Length: 154
Image 1 (cartoon, rainbow, N blue to C red):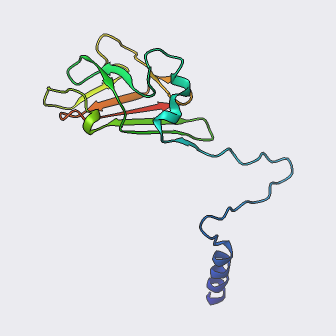
Image 2 (image 1 turned 90 degrees about the vertical axis):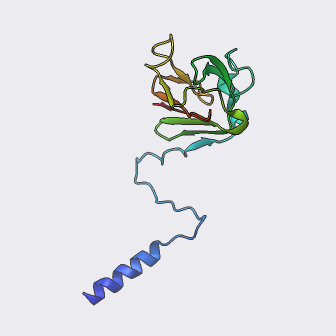
């Protein structure tokens, strides 16, 4: 048993890879190459390629939507992230805080999604990176006006 433990420790030590180093395994004959890397955009200005073709997004990731009171408001991002995996799944997360708050005088959390949007059922969200649309999204507006939008594209 002691020999087995020593051998296991040697194998683990042999597989240790320094931080930042790439570990690649050879492919078997006819095997497909490794999937592409994850694509991450965390700067809204860099994401405006797909949105630029739509007039409702005149200045990057700003967009018009319903505030917490159900009135039209312009939403400006404080943080932005879009991640596309090698399989093509994509998640876009946009938040607004501080100077980017929107009105919400309801005293409660307001939640919008594709089935709960004033006067517009089946509302879609647009990816600012890929240009895809989805009904799989949710926006939450807190009583203080801070907000977050998460959209999943697959």
